[in-house]
Amino acid sequence: MDEWKFNRVQLKDQELIKEYFRKYPSRSCDRTFFGVMLWGRHYNLDFAFTGKAILFREKTESGYGFAWPAGPDEEIRELIPQMEKHCEEQGGEFHMYGLSETQFALVDSWYPGKYQIEYDRDAADYIYESEKLCTLSGKKLHGKRNHINKFKATYEDWAYEPLTKDNLEECFQMALKWRNENGCDEDEEKNCEMCVTLNSLRLFQELHLKGGILRVNGKIVAFTVGEPVSDDTVVVHIEKAFADVPGAYTMINQQFVEHECMGYRYVNREDDAGQEGLRKAKLSYKPAMLLEKGVLSKVQEVSE
Image 1: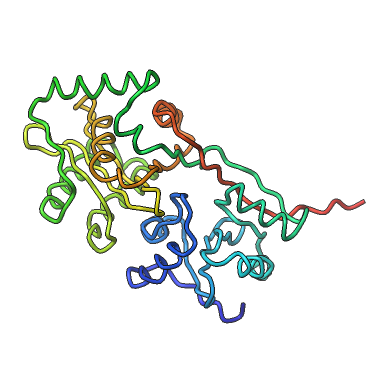
Image 2: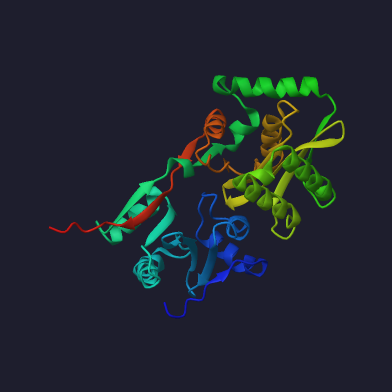
């Protein structure tokens, strides 16, 4: 543990971190280089390579928290007591965040009754079958098909394009306009998300991201940015559309999946952050599963 050297995630770390994410895959939206680099600034995240695993550490009000390490299970088993000791030495309480039910079950089998977990519904990832998001087939998605048909009838001169170096700058300018129209400067969370959005476009090629844009009358009205998170899952990180173009969100969602995701079984559209409107919208697409995530902590001993 003494040799752990924590550093902020930088572009030069991409090859190492992606290698370990590929070796030890997850469908969680947290397991992308995009997330640990771009969102890492917001969450005060740094990382350390132990030689066998990668640790991700987040600075919190109560000290430090750790994500599930990227590495083999036998190494993680040995690392947990070391991470706990590290937190105690820093004067804080030990916790691990973003753990799935499967991961907690492993911890509980290694250290029975020592740790507990509290799941956070607001942090659950919505995971959909790609084919259903593409075809929108069935009675439950009938309303979505109507939105698509209405969009096509209203805007006959619409077009989808993959996001490439040729239209990146135009997409960046559309994102700036979206920011100005949605009061991002007055809202800290919106402003943070917009910083991540703009940085994802600035580094789109360097981060090897996927993306798509939707045009109406030649102008970009919506765009999406995502990437594969595992062999069978693509995660959608960013999705923006102008509010004065009805159906644009539904259309870019469907078109991005049709053109960029059909080689994958699932699409992870991330969490709803506890926002009621966003939760309603994500549930309306009928997810195949919710990937619940929780915070692990030590079971407090009760003194007699």
